[in-house]
Length: 584
Image (cartoon, rainbow, N blue to C red; front, side, top):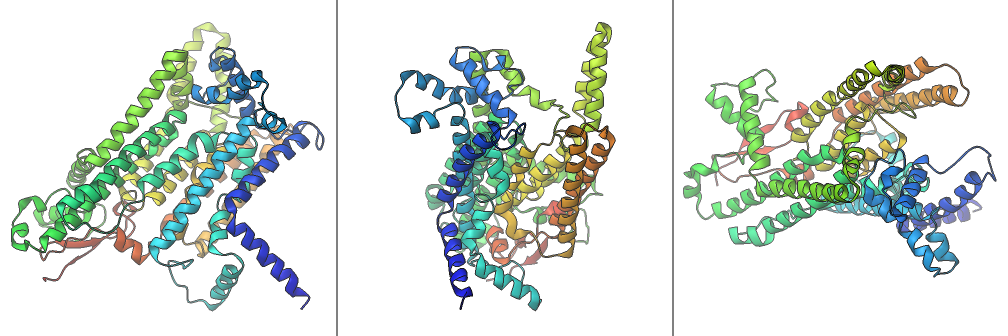
């Protein structure tokens, strides 16, 4: 009886956290902005330890230059879009009017305005994640049910106990709104949520939601099915272009979005043909246009096998057959560039990037293009870098500084450094192409997560902000990851050990002044291997529920057509299940 009040109060607290996650998440962020900035930045708690990120000082200094009528790129190391500095300069022009009370002065002060703006964007990201997870749970028709049923009674009891204490709404909020990592990053003054994560999540929310019910006629396909896809492709292209202009890396998602839009467009047309097929079966069976590039990859492979008199059906990706790879490449070019929705997405994305970049160059000159966009292709930075390339960058920087003393060797050293800086892009390009065509058409959120995870792991610069790039996508596909396997447990433990090892070695180098450069490099290699091993575990345990598989499959109701269901995508090395439908 004495334990009942504490249990009831705990349940009441959990219900409050689950019912108002957006408001509480925003309140936590605003409180930390004021409290930690006052305690640490002003030296009240720990002298010499600063909470505000150095990038926030760069933002505010660039905003001061803009308010004074100068270019934001006069601030050294400002390599972002000029529109961010223009937005942050608003309080400086408003404060000259002398209007508002204490609250207005606090909000519009240069010390807090940018942080408040970034926290608001971070909360909006959390709200998008919350909405998409709830919508996904409703689409699957099950609330908080695992994809694979585990017969282990002990694990069942643990899951029931966890579900009793943590309702699904609270779990959704814990992924981002109550997550300490994004809270820490946005309250310190990092602009990742505002500049990058918000456009990426908004594009996913627009692109990955479409009506599942098939239209009954071709006219309804244009009015009720295809037109929303066109409109969403244009909207997603505009937001995607804003994200690319603000931070270059979202360009890696372009092919994935195009492939997903192409499949949605083709699915609507094929479902429309299926409804008309019930009335004119004989006519459609003799129509040669039905056997075209709209079919699935497994059907294309079957046609290629039949032409080559190959007895194997439903095979995996034909790595050892270059002719088949070439034919599939032609199919994918037709899918991406000859489908109106994917083409509109590409055109609007390129147009948005071009317009914004042109405006920036017109206003601030060629430096806006060089520092805001082109610099990120060859960025090399050895400070606070988790990448395995950091030691090579550190040594090349030292050699470049030595060469700068001799004018005859300066140009050669810099050109060689820039050429070597492009080498780490090669494995990233291979991995992105592998996942864009193999997973994205069937599972967009999981494909984007795998692409971002691999991109960050193989990147030559990795900071703490980069982790939020894929952590914001993980809640959208967490139900397809097999978390309760031994392989996943070992991978997560290995990743945690690698992070602790890197932090200890970096602390000895930067804080204690030890000459532990090689130890930090070995820790970076260990961290890279742990990330690759975790990605391998995620792909090996990739799960796809039966209902979702049926929702994403393209079905042609004909006696001469194959009904194909994807089991994780063709490029994952999984087998495509093909069967003949029964004649009606």
